[in-house]
Length: 352
Image 1 (cartoon, rainbow, N blue to C red):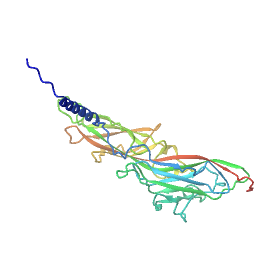
Image 2 (cartoon, helix red, strand yellow):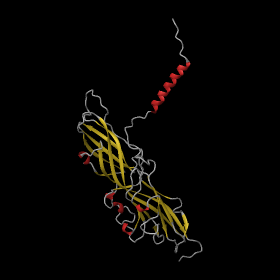
Image 3 (cartoon, rainbow, N blue to C red):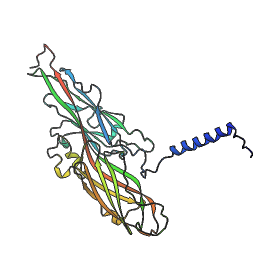
Image 4 (cartoon, rainbow, N blue to C red):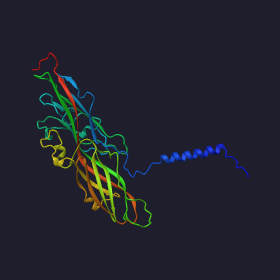
């Protein structure tokens, strides 16, 4: 019986290396997560605000002005078209805070943007006494395909006249900045359309219906968290679930609600305006659909979550296929930040 010649070590090494390479390539192949959406439409933030370091300071002496600088950044994927930034929480008889301007009341001191897109808020927006207490933002770009990591930024400076404490040695107060703005959420995913989901034939299908569970948000504080598909012959019921993930307060974006969001508004946001999202559109295959149009309207959220059921009639389809679905939400949103400030009277000086 003839003995087989042993395989040369070099060939064994090549085969082993080839098998290892195939294994590594297989493990690196991305799995089908059945979720889509552009990468810049990720995250759960919209327009974010923060105070610059030491503006306002934690502690200061009187005899000088108080300076407050608010930084704004559009961290979401929608361009701001209307927003209001207010400064409040102080006694106007002690701190006469105003928006710093570039020489006239129609041109606020705003860094990083075109100043023509901003104007001060005066008594017509709720302050009632002509004091400049905020600024209107007409435009601040969001993240997009050309700038997927960063949206527009701006700084707004508020300053007071010189502060003189009278009949008190110190004044402690929280100074707050409140942002009210309109925003949109756009969710783009893929779903399976099956005109006959319960067929018992051996017919091959390109896909089977499934629930879509987006994660990580859509570059906005309100997110579509689920599209639950209930398939029937010739039609589908879609349960669209939305959730407030941004940590702020959600309100109906209709009419004058942006003005009512102001901390200086006497009316304020009433209960029926809170926790309301407008479902602007649901499109499948990029087309308007009369049945889907019926579910457009207001969605009320309870404990930060809400849902709506839409019906989609499948037309002219004989086989299962995958197609895009696009959902657009519109709403108002408000967030606030606060810093405690202490003003101390300069020793030995009488301001009485």
